[in-house]
Image (cartoon, rainbow, N blue to C red):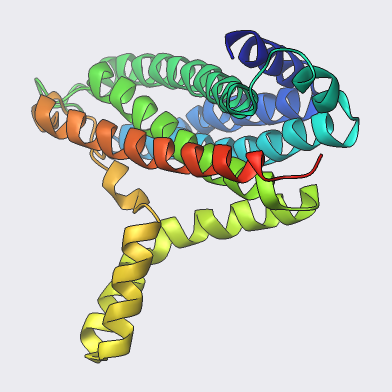
Length: 268
């Protein structure tokens, strides 16, 4: 499983799509710094953080969905999966190895962007303190622990997304279907809280049942918004971070388990 994961990570890192998205994310994160010419003051730091995490979320989702589907179907379509599974390799090891490889790819992506964002925020904060001493209140500067926590939450979100995309890929007949379904899952996970509020306001019994089913099957990505500030005073409790982490790992494990069952029944 670890050998398959390492090979998956190396294969994904060599793809130009990954390199293009990484370069684009770097450009968006670092380029947002030049908005300092507008002299936003202290709120500018929050704006820069939102730009960085927005690039991480959107481009990371595109990378995770496309990489999961492409790396899985490349093995199946090129018949290399048959050669691999002819050896003493279980199908569960194949599926979990692919998931771990994509998870490592997402971790590298998030770690690089989080590090860059932290440097950009520190650089801009130092300039604001020097040029506008009153713009940043004492003790109200950037908490890099909060930035790191935001990067971790982005990675957990991508891990769940990779597990669901892999689940779809194990029974889908085409890579395009897996990619499209992966983006649909992303939309549902982001917007299900709005649907729940709409059903509650409507007072429809059928709507409430449908909302309960959706919320139990699909994770709510709004849960990962616990690092929505840059102040050290707003750092969530360790228990809250642990609860969200277990929430993500639980959904990922459930989707991975279903993917293993689905792939065992698949004709290759």
